[in-house]
Image (cartoon, rainbow over all chains, first blue to last red; front, side, top):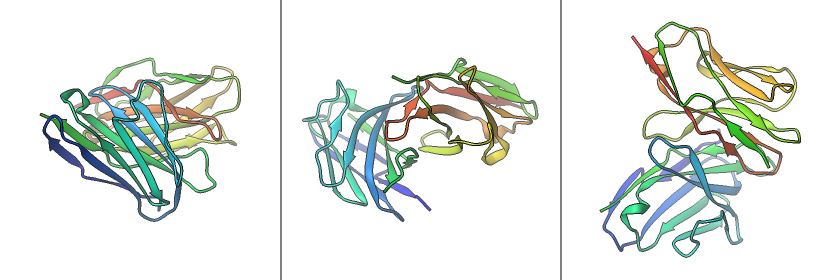
Length: 116
Length: 112
């Protein structure tokens, strides 16, 4: 149980275009989803927290107009990287928490974004 | 505020040798502690967690960790490692209702 999927697993896009990454909780309802960014050989950095039906809360230094997060349902959150640049190339990982469970996060497999 | 320190960025070890990956945390209140493993180009997989109760926690793949409140540590151990254990290991801490805070990670390199 508690499986989280991400789509796509990897994507290459041209500079200036936008790309959408989906995060789905497959067998549970996720009231809260988190988006992380991971640079090579580094730890995970929290970008934002999204709650179903409300606006995402962004961490300091994360541009909300560049990284658009939508949590439209209890099983789906999306991260859209707008006007992507090569420096946005990274590994993006989402996680989700079970409704009523505030301490354990279940992680997706990650999405490798390369901007050329 | 809570923070996590993984003292070793890399740990090389020979196959079948024991290993300990160190993790220290700082927090003024009760915390929940986790160890995750990440294989190349993959997400995080939970190895084990400490929520309450016994301070010795057993996880998957033969790993275990011991919560030491006086030393604010949660070191991960395995008595005999395999080549397949080569991966990045992350220690993380959270307080109920708060965000996970990750350590910097430790790269375990198992050599034949």
